[in-house]
Amino acid sequence: MITQQSVSYIRVSAGRQGNSGLGIEVQSDAIERFAAGERSEPIGELVEVETDEGIDVLDRRPKLAGGLAHAHKTKASVVMAKLCL
Image (cartoon, rainbow, N blue to C red):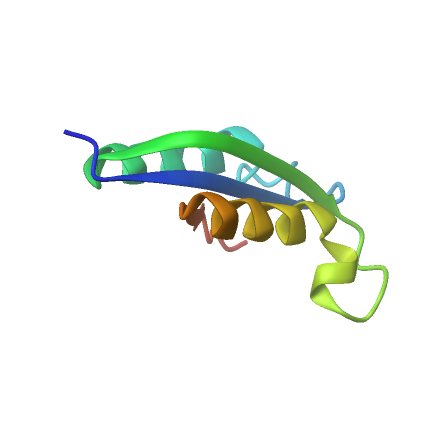
């Protein structure tokens, strides 16, 4: 039984993180496993490559800003993977 909807947000650092083994696919798999365990229905996946330009985090991550707005509108959760180098 599905208990909620979720939007996944995946971010990698330009170059460095993608080469570390903690790239998009690994994060996507981790989020998918988490959502399945929480009985959450994925309704979208946002992927962003960050370049660390700009000061404000939402200025640097426009897909995150859009995902948060979409989740708010649809009353969905936002799920992110935190994988460290």
